[in-house]
Image (cartoon, rainbow, N blue to C red; front, side):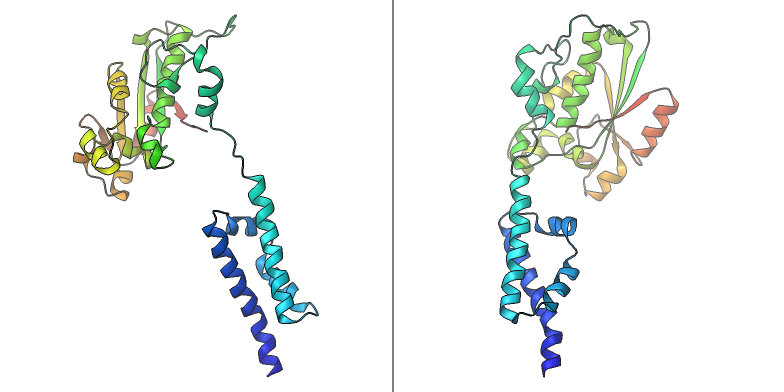
Length: 259
C-alpha cells in the first residue's frame, strides 16, 4: 500500500500542476512557455517527491513555486515594447510628409537635413516586397494592414529621396495572414462588419503601378476562393515562385517587417 501511495505522488503533483496551468491560462498568463523557459517540470516534480514532507505540504509548496514563477514573469512582460507604428504616431507623425502615397497615416517620411547618401535618379529601382502580416486582433480590422502601410512607406521614402515615380517598379508578394486584407469590400464587410480600410491605399498603389501576386498555397490553406479576393490580384502556385523569379530579373528582395 505504501509503495502504491509513493507511486501516486508524482501523479497527484502533476495533476495539481496541470490544474494550476489551466487557472493561469484563464488569467492570461503565458504559463506553459514560462515554465519551459525557466524550469524542467518533471525534474521539479521529482524534487518535491523526494522532500521529507507530507503529500499535502509538498503539494502546497509545489503550487506556490509555480505561482511565483508565473507572477514574476507576468510582471516583467506587463509592459510590451510599443510597435514601430505606435512610436511613429506618438513621436514623428506631425513631422512626416507624404510625397506620393497619402492614404496611410503610417507611411509618412520624416525629412532629414544634410543627407550624404543619395539615390541615383537615373537608375530603375526594382523592389520586391514580401508581405505576410495579418491582423493582430479584431479591433485592427478597422486599420490599414501594417505590411501594406510599410510598402507605401518604402515608396514614399524613395520618392522623398529624389527617385522619380517612373523609376520605381514594385512587386508585392502576398501570403499568410495578409491574404485577408485583399478580400473584396463585400467579403471583408461580411467577415468583420466594417468596410475594407485598405481600398483607398490599393487605388494609390495600383496607380503607380504596383503589381500584387498572391500565394496559391496560402489561399488553399486558408480555404479562400479567388472570387473572394480583389479582381486585380494575380495568383501564383506559391509565394516562392515570384520571389525567386523576380530576384532573377534584378528585383531587390525585402521581407516586410512591421515590429
